[in-house]
Amino acid sequence: MSRSIPPDCEPNTTGTLPKQSRVLVVRRHHFLVRWSHWLNLPILLGLILSGVSIYWASPIYQHKPDPHTGNVDLAVDIGIWICAHVPGQHQYSSPPDWIYNHLSLGPGMLAVALRLHWLCAYSLMLNGMVYVLGLVMGGGWRSLLPRRTDLLDALRMLRYYLGFPFAKLAHRKWLHPLFNTKYNALQRAAYFAVPVAGFLSVATGWAIHKPMQLYWLAALFGGYNVARAWHFWLMWVYILFVVPHVILVFSDEWDTLRSMIVGWSARVEAEKVVANEH
Amino acid sequence: MNIEEGKKLHGILEERPLPVYKVAPRTLLHRTRREVLLFGIGAVASLTVSGFLLPQNTLSRLGAGRNTNSSWKEWFLNSALRIDDDVAEALYSGNRRVPTYTKCQTTSLKNNYNGATPDPGYISGWNLTLNGLASGLSLSLDIRSLLTRFSLHEQITRLVCVEGWSAIAWWAGLRFEDLLLAYPPMSQAKWARVESSVNLDASGNPDPYFMSLDLATARHPQTLLATHFNGQSLTVDHGAPLRLLVPVKLGLKNVKAITSITYVTEEPRDYWAEQGYSRYDGI
Image (cartoon, rainbow over all chains, first blue to last red; front, side, top):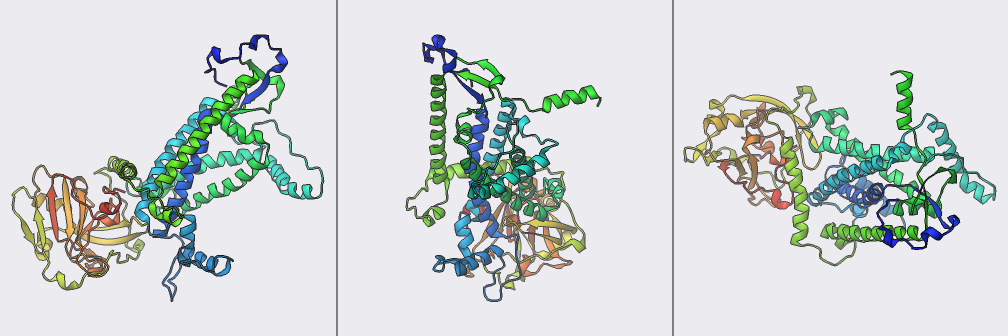
């Protein structure tokens, strides 16, 4: 906790309170980490929505033109399939646009989408720097580093998560693997991988945005066209991360979600008290 | 690295226990309240800003009838474009050449005329008009005088479209720089307005295409006024008889069937910038 509260805000009985009335908390997330964490939400959403709109202008995954419609875009085929087979979508007015109408800003909006994409991209880079600054200032970066034992521990966690629903159904005890670190191995892998993916998204983004001045960067990812595919698939890393991330945080105790808002956590091992805070 | 240093490094990297504090419940309550309040303000603010910045088309499709278009919104979003253009300009180097390829690496290049492809009838009477010259004259050059006066340079480079696709093609043409040396622009000129008056819109009506090109880019050794494609004279699809080939810019700056070049001191109008795209377009 920061010591920013002036003494006159303190309850005046502090000095006379018995020791037991104090609570133990740990400082879990630096405030820069918390703020950049939440800002990622609108920024990444903006990047994905505008990004799919940009994808519309020249899809990476194309096939030979359809003899009837002339369509080449796989995303258009998926939209048509959804409207033909998914209940409730049969009356959809424009099946070829289904994907772009539901998962992007919309089709035929390249100029608008590019403008928003640049805005969000520069915001993401700034936000990423704030996040790293927060990790350094709060010392949180050490908790994200991979360990030699992580592979085995991650498998143990995976086994726990996979078995959890069955154990619940069978009313059997299913013990959470023990660990004495801030994150378990699976969390650590995810929280380490996402910033790496962020860095790669920015790098591939620059590679395809400035393929002439930064041609070496595009070459690093296998050339302009391959870098576009990298940039596309890196988007899926965030989507695949966010789904279990949100499910797990809600199925975990309230303390976990709260700590990302308020910074402190009440999960304390008492013997490690470093300071009395007034 | 000796063992001692290895241990030290390990000590730096090693995770430390989270710092534990004893806090009076009221203090904790105050701080928690402050953080939750700040979080709430931030959430409301970012929701408002996001909703405000979403394109009008998207909002209408989502059923929000409210019109969020305003001059402030345009100004804000356009500043993102301007910042990006400034970054592109800072990245540009007149000495840096773009990668070149071999003939077997070329790919097909589609005719990406935005509107209808012009009728080839214009080619026989074609002239290139130069304005804004140091001499103060207006010059008119036909293709034969261009081809005899200037030496042709071959170049196999990648053309990158703003839409995302790209094509590697084999071009030949005169250097824009050579044209600038032969017919120098007026001394204060910083820009070229490159125009094609034969451009058509989708329904086939005249729709002149005009582009701004900074003279620094025009002087780049790989900026050509192309006359040949795949070893043959340009076809109407690729902008016969003369097109701009500027590989350090997006494809939309590579004006086909150029009919006039005007040197000016202030940044001239730009066809696609007026439709919401960036205007420097350096890649």
